Length: 382
Image 1 (tube, rainbow, N blue to C red):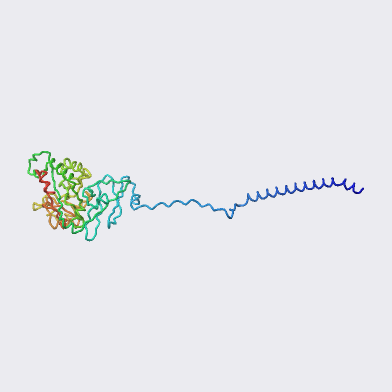
Image 2 (image 1 turned 45 degrees about the vertical axis):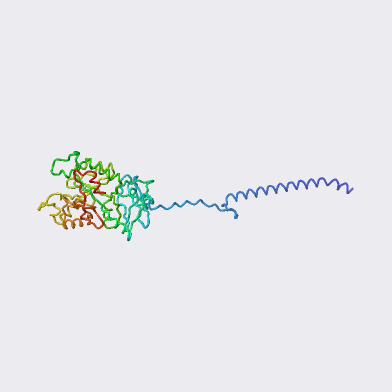
């Protein structure tokens, strides 16, 4: 009896246990879901914290620009599209770069100094510098050309004893007026009028034989024994800036690329140079006239008067580099006045060649007269 009842009650209890288990599982599942939802909400609102073992992101550093070279820094100071930074290289040469303008002639190139040596010039390559190749030597007779707005010139040296032993004499050629008439002009100044055909042949000779054409600052350094100038050298000058010079001769020196100096009487002419190969320098402002004793005013006026005249001329031309004495007349008073007014060099009409030690305020010259053919010219210049 008892066993029968017990057997009949078992299925009902089992069902209650099963139902109870299911209810408990549902409650537990609901609790888990709620807990996860709460955790997600807290996690979303809390600041992000990197996992202890995760790597920290490093920003990419900004590259440090390479420092500018001296030439680049110099170019950065100008907005001139024609500017060129000229650098200088060579044994014992410490000159910094300088700005030049492409398409013009070099101006103011440095002349380094060294005890017991003479500077032998600037060259386009180290090989040319080592060979002292005159045809490749660069100075104020050459046009500035650059690659990417830069160029480097290479210096060379010779011993002072070598330079002294060569005993080079530099001719300063002096022209005046020019004529298109082979037979010359029919007046008392006939000797002054060089036939333009002879002049062109002479300029062609200088160009074809690669004569070195020194600048005035180079000539000054040469006189001091600080600069080597090769034997085949010449300086071309003209007195008075006559209209025949401007119309006939100036185009020829431009065609042959031969820098020349035209000594201008600035009271008579103030127009600009006809081309870049004609350097205008002073023939005084208003002293190309006779003074009280029949000689030029330059040997009649006082130091103050001469200095004032030369200052006026220098202001017009913008230079005190060199002048030519009118009529070739000068004395100690004139030389003192030139020093006071800042002139370093002065050319006379006295015949001769410029050598080491020549008086800078009494430079001799080689006068070119009418009728001087190429053979005679060749004998004078070498």
